Image (cartoon, rainbow, N blue to C red; front, side):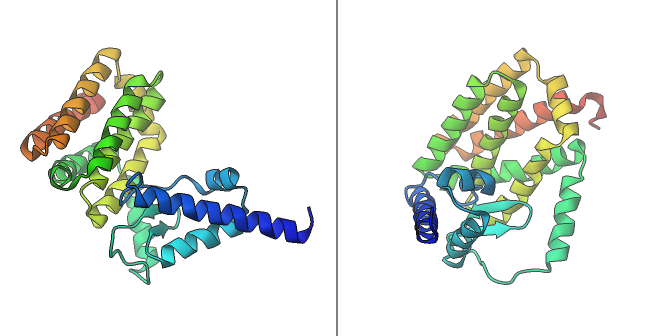
Amino acid sequence: MDTRNIRSHAATGASALVQMIEDNIADGSWTAGYRLPPERDLEKQFGVSRNTLRKSLKLLQDQGRIVRHVGRGSFVATPGQATGPGPDPEAADSLVRRIHGASPAEIMEVRLVIEPAAVELAALRANAADVRRFRECVAKSEAAEDVGTFELWDGQLHVAIVSASKNSLLIDLYSTMNETRNQPEWLRLKHRSLTPERRQVYQDQHRRIVEALADRDADTARSELRDHLLLVRSNLLGSAVS
């Protein structure tokens, strides 16, 4: 392939990439706080180089469509979210490291503080695309054939609920905290504690939470989510919970 063809191929791939991201944001498939696929996956899908991909993402960032965080990925921006210079990057990285180093007990305590409040906001602010996403996550978690896949879609449901709060600070905080679910200690606890019976209970709770959100019943959504998290914490940590 000569140089002109290479450049043409790269331009076509970059254009298709940008169009795909813009379309998913415009039609509500990707809501505020949604994490874009990993860069390596986008490179393969659109046949572009890492440099071309990052130029495309930089363009979308400059337009205020996405925000990018070093070491975490790219996310759909909340309308009006700043994309220019922000706080001290070293301080931000330090906070991320502290969150990633938190114990499962600490993570569950923080989740019990912020998720019930987030689900109340989601009950008021979720749109039709958000509700479709909730139901997609529930369906895929129920169809999962192994603990890892169930855990993935379980986590995505909680991310989708927090994203529907439309609060960019809350979304960023939760997205960072949710990454701890991929750590070996968390996965070991999940594999050890997730029996078929408990999984069925979790699935029933997920459905009640989602139906309350679809009905815009903030009180029920908050109560159901809190009960769910308390049960998850008890099953994960047992007597370690004080």
